[in-house]
Length: 503
Image (cartoon, rainbow, N blue to C red; front, side):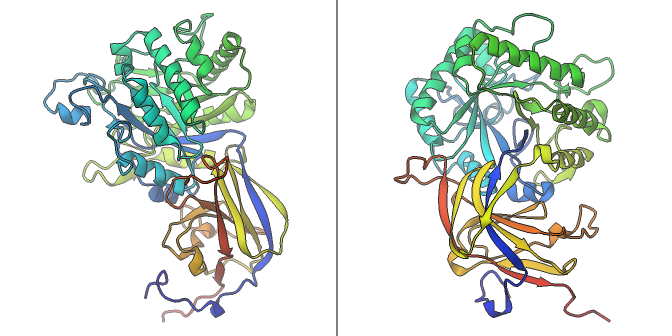
């Protein structure tokens, strides 16, 4: 018998354990933590799996795509279009070997790009789209991309990232001045046609001993058009992967110093303010990690932890967050290593426990702001503005002791909703079509040891977009705020003793 489909007898469920019902608002962490999911080094991993592993949504999930529609190989992925091409580095293909962007002119709303974005948003995270784009494409292409992104809430886009380097196609085909001018052109089009999209400029913004940033004259307009400034810089990276083995004394890896790196980020931010006069923007680290190819997996997370410690200690208002690259990796940059025997499977690494500890700290976790106690138990208004801004409902519970069973069942009218539930700091997703969710994992840790509930356990519910997109409505803010109504509070099924014991 499937409890998701049977006609549940609600007389067996009650709200006796609910002591108060309040409105609740999801508010930003002091510093956000994001994560990459898929790139040239790994496949996209579904958000149900990541949520189960991490225990809570990330602030943002970064997906990486490329758009070179004027090339004859398009829309094939570069490595698939040239399977026999002799390459000596990851970036030797005619264009970047990311998955190809499924939108734009001639694209499809049913492509994998948009399915991933919808998956991310249903599971309580916001999207960052990293997109490398041919600087030669006309405005009509960029307008179509802007129209593609209009329905995806508070989405960020990284346009031609790492653009002061020399490895990506945009830097091999065009001058730094041309790449900077393209960013500014695309950013202005997005501001006009998709004002919900924030533009990230990733342009080598660490400032070491020099007075000026790399190519700052070429990127001045881009600095001003960007909403967020960014830097990609790894604490340790084997950039020769997968074409050589990382060995001591080799020339294809680099390591950094945590405190020096953070100081260079600060000086980069200060230089940006001096150049632009803009003080309302933040700097983020859009890709950061330590490569296990260099350190080995056992101590891989140590530098990442020290970086998080430094961020938390400094309490800098200018630093807007960092993104761990990436969840699952074919090399040793992931929280999981892709299983070479089964590409759909991941092998967890010690780094995962380090990142989980970081995102569970209050400084790096979204908070909750509860309203007054309310008597309204039906037709409760819900608003999803994003992973750091949402209005939901909070149930204050009274539990006798550690439960043996704890699940929630929703009213038939709410079955098609997409909901995020948080109990004792552990998050769960209720997909459309699902009626009952087992919340018992909130009461044990990663080693399956029991965790006693707090004095006043809170069950918090938020409604994410059912289709992963914001439908266009008459509301002025439809593109950033999704609204729905929860018809009834869920029924709680709580038991403190086993039904029976096996003799």
